[in-house]
Length: 455
Image 1 (cartoon, one colour):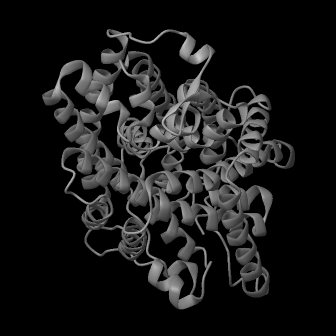
Image 2 (cartoon, helix red, strand yellow):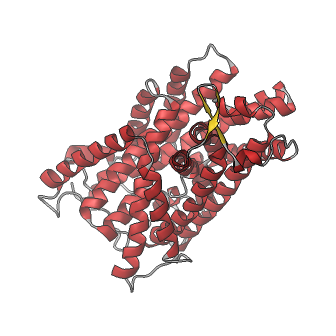
Image 3 (cartoon, helix red, strand yellow):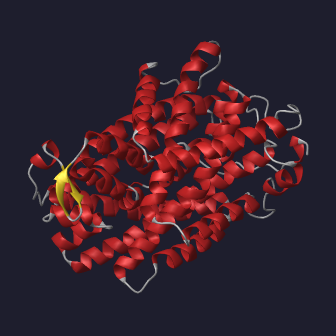
């Protein structure tokens, strides 16, 4: 299948819509309520330090992504960057990693919908309600992108109101001493126990997952109007706003709880805080707001990764019939509808079987590995492509990528062996496929889109 036969996406997004989509992919509220809770489960009150370190690393990662994304603004996003700078094999591994994230991240957030519905009524099944929500969101994700952006922007406004409420509740109802972070505790077998340093490092991965999503500005770049520099700006603005609006309620929520033991043990700690401080009615209102936020996040992320899967078809990553199928664009909505349905269908099936914490820890490993590749690429790019145009240039080079590499390296060393093992198996199978199928014909298979020539 020739590249020219793949249908193109429509440029309908403004710069503000791009930021809105990227922020919705981070979804500060949904991430706080769904994935940040795993930080408390793993590290207890030391989650304050784990989350803070994760936010610091996320800023340095965003700097790397902003520069490289402005140089290579394509729907393939991070995997196209790795391909351009680090070569075909690593580019393919990055693509597989990214596509796997596209399956597990929407499913993880959809499981959050089931978790909060269950908190409203114990008779509601977490897995079944999550799967139903994921199926509905998939259909919405097929709509024209500017329609999706409008839906997302409305939900995002609700989201920030709830985040401010959580922050204020903790700030003005300070109930815990500073010793909970100077001498942190974690729940072990129903009682308080000390926190090991390894647990803090391990929890950084979940915190990175929580603030992840600013890279989506690159994935939507082929549908945005304006200059390539705006892609880098959108990455940084979304990252900084998202991080601030997650870290503040995370920190103040921890200090605002009356019952630290119950808070660290809860599957819905942040909405529990509102219920305890402002009453059950306020708690239910915030829980409903949480459901809007999580649905918003799931919609934005499904749209993002549908573009990644669509791009993999355009880039000839698979046998030709598969590439042609993935490359289809809806004639009316101008969206990659087949790729959207595939992402949504697999995520829906995953919702029926997975648990929230296990999906978070596994997906976090995928995210950390891709961050490492991007940081390495940002160093190699400055050395290998000295004269290349950089529409958006990061500050603090090479400090930012060095901090990223050290941070994600330490984090990866403390992840569950089973998660690392599964990711390693996926990588091995991917390399076998690459060298026995794709590598044999370099010009007809695995030819990622070049934004400089639009080919």
